Length: 395
Length: 171
Image (tube, each protein chain N blue to C red):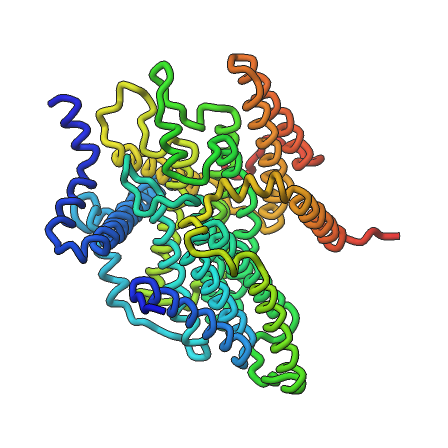
């Protein structure tokens, strides 16, 4: 039970893949190798989606002072299976007057492009489906095609609410794509590469027992927070869930979808959230690397999924806590706060790069972030006063 | 030329996607359908870039054209006229003028392609893929003036958009 065992445990998926591929005749091996990667992605992440639905309903239930699902199986753990069966057997209603081809293609495009996002994410040491030279670019390029899918869904439904939802979703996604990409650019600039595998490898080195995660630097911390906010908006999660806005536009762009097509949209939304969380992990939280030197024995893919689950729990917590924004608040937040902060973060990264290492560098960089942050927040708040809220009928 | 199935199948299907998307984009009646087919055509072009090993250009093509330009086109159609209008005229102008313009444009493109250095280079002179770092180096050294001019132009466009969107002051 030495170092060799843990190394083998770490590389277990790779060994399994080689073992299966070697069983096949030589001509099929490249194809089989690619297909195995695809099958793994198709199996693991929808499984994670099933876990997340129960986790989210339970967690939101607890936050809202109720139990959540507890009828199906022990502690309600079989609820995802029941939900899945229900959506498969539900009647598939296609409203009259819809644009049939576009209507059917929209969820397909959404699901395909969302699954493609996972192909460049390094899930463990040497575990990545596609090691591209321009991996980050691939991620964002594929990510933008979901906007087209959202538009297709909203437009082809021939429904006012769907169209409004689609317009809101696209406006929001385009606005928040800018801070999303800009906060990423800082990492690219400091790492000097567009390859996600190399970015993680750079963070997986240790100094005094602590990993070189980007999160542990001032620009990385600011970038991570900005990225996370933009990612929440990009995946239409609460408090940025205006495109769905149940109380105003019912369910937004997928209002006219029923049965399994609706389930596909639901799945696509969650898979998009996981993918963008995986990207945040890769860029700022050191991907598959351990935070401390002495934790090296935990397999790399376990670290990735621990971090992913932690981020998912964070998103559930945020959803249960914050109220929905208004459209104008959403837009002014993106353009007047997120964008300037991203640009400030650039300057901070440059200062960090050219100052000698030490406590002085950390202090200067934190001040450079804190002053614009306070100034922008004050300017955005304007002359509004916040008083302690008093209730007449409740105590 | 030898037929290599493992390479040519990809090219033929990408070319079919591009040309098919292009033809559909100019011949369909519903403008939104045209815009979506146009996006398919652009996606096919991006696929050909990737097939040629130009990762950066291919992904930039998807990011800019499929992600942004086609959304812009779709918004422009929705905001200017009825999107569900099926009665629009299918062909505009005279076929003779259109054909002349098309032939002239194709001629100019072909002539510049044949005259360029790329036509004379052999396949061995190209590496398998252009590394992104090399493109960045070129942009920041030999093509830095072009980069700066584009940056200035985009800033001007941004300022113009802000000016247009500003609420008019009361007199």
